[in-house]
Image (cartoon, rainbow, N blue to C red; front, side, top):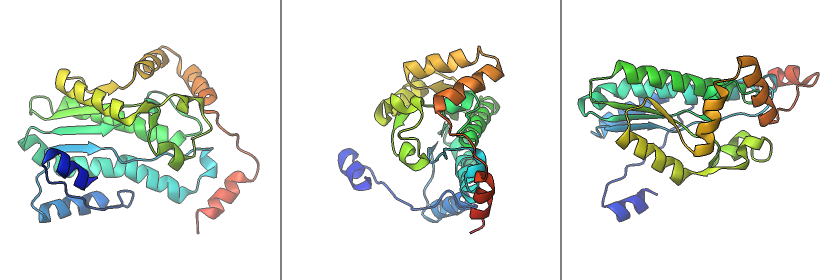
Length: 233
């Protein structure tokens, strides 16, 4: 992909492999950038993954990686690079999700991490007003990517039946950066309508509707204990 970008646009694309789900990965990446004398103008915190199933059945080690990647590394990179981003009047674009607007039974931790990303980014938008740095949280719905295969949601929830292409989602995000100064945006007309609608529901109703949409499998006796035991390996 780096070679394709360089050939098509006459740019230099530098690839730095890193496991951003590992604690301290953000600091190591920033140190690597400094060693290469690379100055960051735009930070896109796009890396993330979800887990599908009742909370107690998912190994704790996998949940810890999910929180680290979706929240910990995102905050770490944003903090470490903010001086550069403010100095260059750059951009912070954080990928949240429509899952941020209501609890998501079946993907309880994923939804909670994306709620954090949305809240954090909108607060950062307000705090940095007047600096010239642009901050935006992008909230896509089901998107044509590897997300479903990794999370195990490819054939389960109804929400993933109508996916937006990644290219369309990115195009909407870029237009929002160019034409608005909002702290967040939801990509896709259907997704925007649903995000507005859920805010009108009582929380109890919102979580019940989300549960039905997600098609959450139920916890069975013995599942939680076996999951805890399995997480120790």
